[in-house]
Length: 170
Image (cartoon, rainbow, N blue to C red; front, side, top):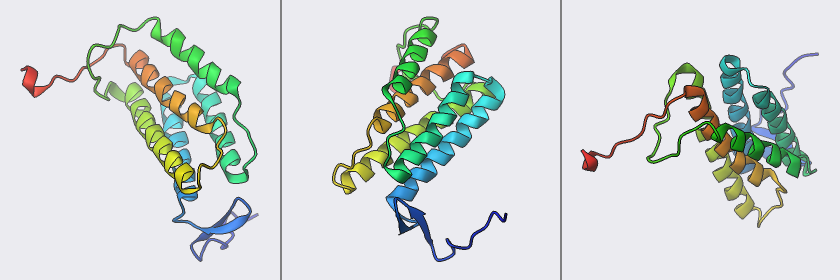
């Protein structure tokens, strides 16, 4: 079987039962999902968390849900993230300043994934507005919680917090 179909050579693709232009906000969201999953895969290659593998699986489910309109994300998925956040947070110091997105090869891809996750959330909300409040079920709450999870994971992985210092404070 060949990987190429040539059906997209006219600038369209098949999604949600119709051919749409690849410039569609629907495709932008799918691209954000793909990029987020790739960054999480990068983080997973150095961190090896089973949570990250499960998150990658759920991101594929979200892509399927957005493509078909059939619910795939369930409340247990969100609760699992919340429990992981709570567990990781137990060992972290309280946040007193903004934290710089850094921390070496282990934490940096997690910070990039978090930034992509936030972009995905913004693009989902934009799509929801354009589609007159399209029902995305639990997708947006999951993505919102995922960005929180990635923030806490990056703090945990790097083991220290490099905080931002305002020029005004100096």
